[in-house]
Amino acid sequence: MLTLAIDPGTDKSGWCLFGDKGVLASGILQNADLLVEIAIGAFDQLAIEMIASYGMAVGREVFETCVWIGRFMQAARDPDAVRLVYRRDVKLHLCGTAKAKDPNIRRALLDMFPRTGGGKTPQVGTKSQPGPLYGVSSHAWAALAVAVTVTAREAA
Image 1 (cartoon, rainbow, N blue to C red):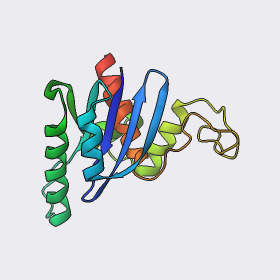
Image 2 (spheres, rainbow, N blue to C red):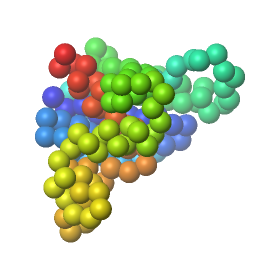
Image 3 (cartoon, rainbow, N blue to C red):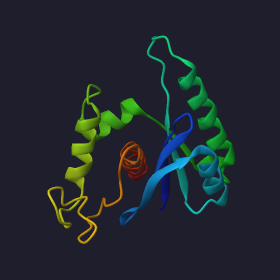
């Protein structure tokens, strides 16, 4: 099963195409360009990190991100194949605690993949010796975390 996972943002979003063989592609795209990719639908399910309210005041960026989440959902060919994943669920799945921070999540992801590439982080590797996570960077890490979480949830 192919999962397109998204870490949404106000202008750009991190994305990861994840399947049985791991990360197939990842990156960061302008949201308008990502809408086009979603509409093409070269995946089985769409997983989007959803925003949760914890009682704190939020700004314009949070509401703009919410609008993009809705647009991404609407662009999906099959509404039943859309999964919303909360950050708290990602933290609990990967780290076993809701107090986990981004470095903890990245470390948990690295530990899930084989050390087959070159360099000091062989799971990522180098250009000449790429690892299974080669090319994952920035917000694509959060998208990968969403993909891994929703894939495990679907398998359970």
